[in-house]
Amino acid sequence: MKNFINIIDIPSKNLKKIIIDAKKRKNKRKNLKALDIDKDAPLKGKMLIQMFEKSSLRTRLSFYLAIKQLGGSALTLKPDELHLTKGGESLADTAKILSTYGNAFMLRTDSDQKLEEFKKHITIPIINGLSPSSHPTQVLSDVFTVEEIKKRPISKLQICWIGDANNNVINSLIEASVKFSFKLNIGCPKKYEPNKKLLIWAKKNKGKINVFNDCKKAATDSDVVFTDKVISMNDKVNKSRKLKYFKNFKINSKVMNCAKKNAIFLHCLPRGSEVSDDVFLGKQSKVWDQALNRVYVQKSILLYCFGKLR
Image 1: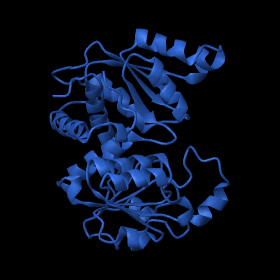
Image 2: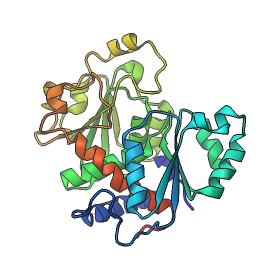
Image 3: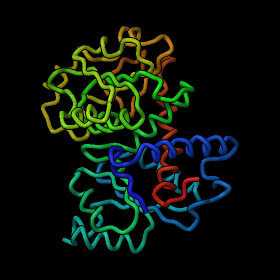
Image 4: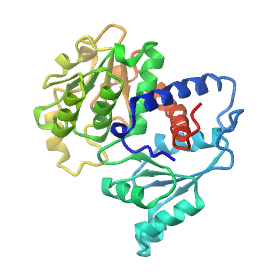
């Protein structure tokens, strides 16, 4: 049994195996419908229990399709319907019940501490579908998407992130940059630079990360330009005040022109005012491919957790 909580905790060779498996499984589904089961049905009879403490569209849909295509089933729980939040049942007892009924547990949570507590008490694989400090399933899928579209290992590419550099997605992207050995340029206001401890870890592990307080400098010669909403689900700040810091960090055609001519634009969604319509809806944007690829990578993450990667 293996958990999938943070990219930093998973060996590079295992992350790469997940990507390779996802590529093979996607190729084999070209003529299949969404709910058709993979021929090998490797997770037949298995049940994934999902719990969402935060809003979700792509994570919810992709994990549902992932387990169904692998031959299993999914059950989604709402926190406000459980004794954990309404009836005073302990997290430890809840974890025991989840372990008794299900075969894997995917949690999208508003608390990193809660994720760690579940990890202590649960006896089935646990997957982080998003937490305040980490979004590993999203970022691993992004690595898959980049390699699929650019047709090169991500280690050969220069990746750029523009926007808030102190949120869960960029944290996982920094971790991935070390695990997959790719160059990562980060463009952000000085007030919103990346987590210092994470940057120190990256530097100690031969990370190739540069931080700029100018989005055009960060985008220069990049193969991929990433961003995320400036006001994320975890933000409990004065929104209008925060947005003022990012007025010069909007991704538009001028910023994309600093990147390579064949550069692509990615956004984990939902979007806000951090990207112009001409970029988001333009030819360089691959956001819909990015969203769909969550299904294929989620499948291979599940197989990894069950020890069934081919």
